[in-house]
Amino acid sequence: MKHGKKYTEAAKQVDRSVAYEAADAIALAKKTATAKFDETIEVHIRTGCDGRHAEQQIRGAVVLPNGTGKTVRVLVFAKGDKVNEAEAAGADFVGGDELIPRIQNEGWLDFDVVVATPDMMGVVGRLGKILGPKGLMPNPKAGTVTMDVTKAVNDIKAGKIEYRLDKSNIVHVPIGKASFTEEKLQENFNALMDAIVKARPSALKGQYLKSITLASTMGPGVKVSTAKFG
Image 1 (tube, rainbow, N blue to C red):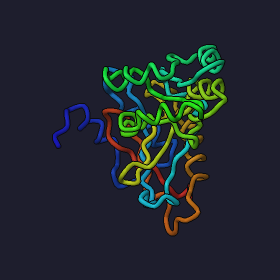
Image 2: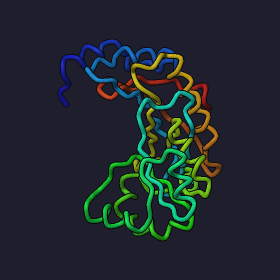
Image 3: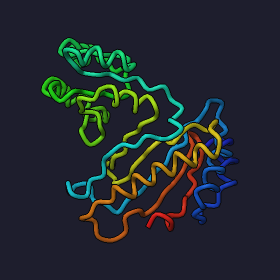
Image 4: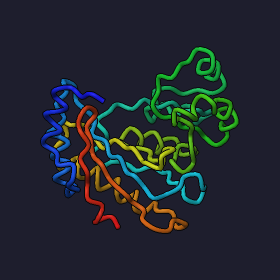
């Protein structure tokens, strides 16, 4: 894969053979974010889990203390007084059955997170084939299937992010923008890693965290030492 001049220059600043301390890796990821837009800083965690086994799955959510720097659009499936509650909490879209054809037939997907009350999961289930592959399906583990709609919407707006294993048993999570201070990125990184360490499946034998890499949207990957995280 051929990289542009900016990427090549940025990559020269990163020693691929070194696993940096988190603070140094964050500083490097910020420094090598040279695009004209405010790049997202992402963490990629390669685990020793085998996601094909249910007992080795990792899935959950964590509220990043400084948010992600992104405005998150929330869709809530609710009925009755929960509709008003969702709107009062600041949900961007609220509805029920009438949203199904809009999503199914018109391809409407102008939202980033979907929350549903448990009594609406029968309705939302009909959208499984569309929402599932995009990682938008509400899930109790992530706190997006709940009667406490106010808390769910508030947490998401405050910077709550979901983490889960992909097919390669890697977790990909944004921890903020390149414009964030190093301190804010460090606090977000620490909150994420605390949650990931606690999420270690008890069924897993052997090494849990195989590698941690930090990278901006267009920048090179920076390895982070896993020593601290056991």
